[in-house]
Length: 299
Image (tube, rainbow, N blue to C red; front, side, top):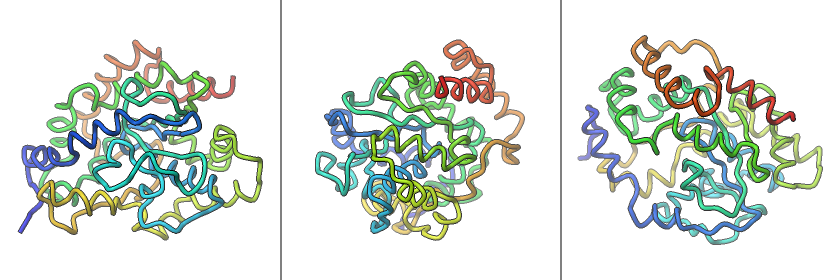
């Protein structure tokens, strides 16, 4: 019987089977149409919320799916989850999720880039992995953050991902958004996304898409955001129990104190920000970056 890992080394071993080389190469070589839109985020930065917004806007509120990534596929994992990324989708424009940095993303389409407070990202990451990729309580938060996350190479690091997209935030084919701003003023964000997708102005459609992206609404359909396709196709390859999984819709919390953060993790996160993000953006911390993003979208 397969069991969940209880150590960081065990976690690394199971994740080695997360994706196939062939599947990843297929995603990297995908050729988008000019109208295609990528929802581009670092993991745990509002991806699911934007998938729901985009799909709701383009379909007028369709909820007839088993998994949000069934209708807005993860381009890097499409092959490995049995999806033909080249096929037509339920409505235009075609939409895809991606965690690729700007340099690796297939060019030719458009992108909604969403960035989130880095402390919130790591806390959300930890809770998402717990119960799916490792036994709850077996790996502490600090160990997870320092020994697992910080050991990754640059392409899989929050700070490098942010900087790669920052350089293109003013490109006409990129819509930059902060997760916190989306949550705090959802109706405005939905209107921005609708305009970016070049959808006809339709107040009823925008109101419906806004309502269906609210936290209470999404909590009413928990199985739609639990990576059913990934679990079905990849748990066995990772030697994980068939029923192992997690949820992406927990609390919708934006900025604020995070009880899980320890001084060591906060110091490491601040150091990485100062080393990588500040020189590239001129922003001393995430609130400053958020202000800069707001000024950019308003200009």
